Amino acid sequence: MTLDAAAASALSRKVSWRILPLAIVMYLAAFLDRANVGFAKLRMKDDLGFSEEVFGIGIGVFFIGYLILEIPGALLVERWSARKWFARILFTWGLISACTAFVETPREFYTVRFLLGVAEAGFFPGIVVYFTHWFPMRERARAMSGFIVAVPLSLALGAPLSGLLLDVTWLGWKGWQWLFVAEGLPAAALGIAVLFLLTDRPRDAKWLTPAERDYLEEKLAAEARAKESAKRFTIGEALRSRNVRLLALGIFATNTGGYALSFWMPTTVKSLSGGSDASALMYSGIFYFCGLAGVLYSGFAADRTGNRKWTCIAGQVSTGVFLAMSAIPGQPFWLVMAWLLLTGLVAHSWPPPFWALPTATLTESAAAASIGFINIFANLAGYFGNHMIGWIRDHGGTDSACLFFLASWYLIGGAIVSLVRVNPDRGSGG
Image 1 (cartoon, rainbow, N blue to C red):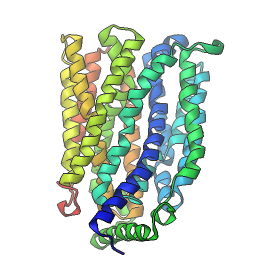
Image 2: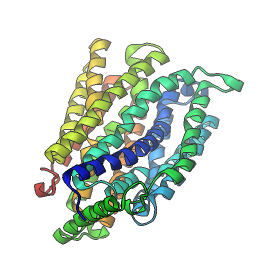
Image 3: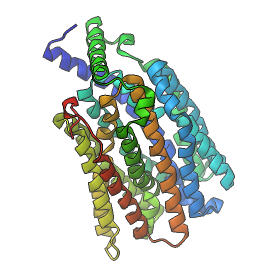
Image 4: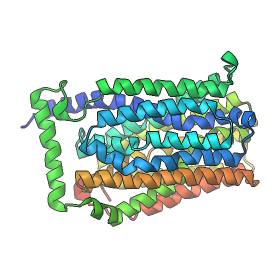
């Protein structure tokens, strides 16, 4: 089945407008519900008497829970149903996130955060696999950039929203309790909606014409056959391959800096500025908002040039450099904030091209397993980085020391990804 160039371009736009908005809304809810603890911390810490390290462990233990269903979650999307799997994830994590409002002790805090990670596990790697069912390789990094825009968008919107919720005291509840309820329950409702709104594969899409369905299915199947003819990786071979190991180590290093930067930004900005909670969240919102431009540009640049590997590395290295500049002691706050805004501009530019790399050369099941495996290391980094920042702050570490620590991990991540071998003929550059 073939389509002329105009019809194929129209089909690409139709798929993007149907698939991406719902995926973005789902990830927006996901990232807000995992990261809002960084906003709530501004009041929650004193109300509950938690130390910085307790918060570091609590923030990080989410990622330990997340590890449990990483690989099974990606394989379920490949072999079962993205629609049903994502609906389950959204509904359970929304309820558990809302339950954070009722914690009183560190043990309860750790338990709820761990269960939140278990509930959300498999969502991100599942989305990466899901996009391989809809977007040909040459469009995939662009689709990922459209999807990952939900990360800075959720934080940019969540920071001022959380600032308003922190001052709500209805029914005797504290503002941070309302924050978790108001931002958690909508995710559960979205889970129900996903059952009716999401389409698993092109062959199931009543909103495509028969010709469009056949064309897209055949195009994706042809790409899969081309990968298999080049080298048919089994799941075991994929997990043992040099590239998969390097990608896993590369994202571990980068996310050691990245996740902690996202969660601790409000605390860091408040400390550096000496201002109020509201001003800290306002500055943090501007930082996250800057990420929108960077994440969109990187996906388009990677697909236009085909150089996904070096687009990824450019984002990692530039983030590390700008973040290190913000950590130089003795600068006025306005200059520190300027460096941080430049950091925000590039901090989310590396994931779209990065997540196009494992799907470029592996067969479907092997790619699904490798994505889950790589994301295990991404989430181990979330625990390690957040725990370390809490420990550093509790043991007298300065804001500059924390920022230098995070910057170094971005630079290490870029160095590791530079060692990945990618065949330029596959449209992945490098």
